[in-house]
Image 1 (cartoon, helix red, strand yellow):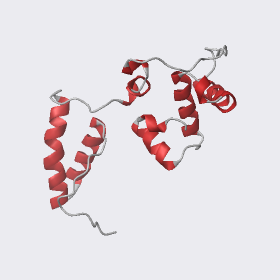
Image 2 (cartoon, helix red, strand yellow; image 1 turned 45 degrees about the vertical axis):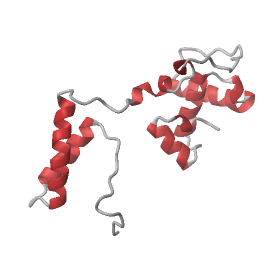
Image 3 (cartoon, helix red, strand yellow; image 1 turned 180 degrees about the horizontal axis):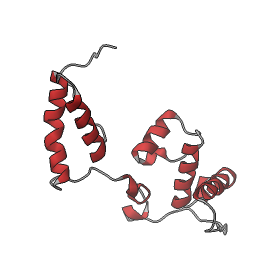
Image 4 (cartoon, rainbow, N blue to C red; image 1 turned 180 degrees about the vertical axis):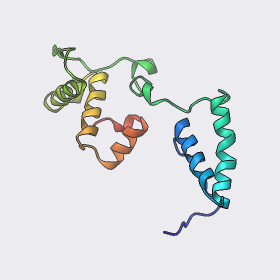
Length: 148
């Protein structure tokens, strides 16, 4: 497959430090080292050094996904009025996600809290109920991964 992009086209992938290190290792293993591998090494080696020395911070963290886009985090309050449904804290996450999805389907999204909507998104993702666009947004941690 031929690359139709111009040489000046640049892209920004989202990679962990471990993934960057892995790419560097693979590029260094090439024998003889091609111009492309040399370019990758020249670009990523200084970047990895900065990461390892805390000279650069991560663009975002996937562990902050649920709080990152919360209404309260933006200074507002949730309009959803949760019903009196209670969830047993002893159930698995998967069972909780299924309960939230069932509530979402029966009562509608307006009757779900932000936490429940996050759980619905997890359930939809795990059960292939998202469009490819929603799935990509969910994986990136953007609010567009939320159910419509």
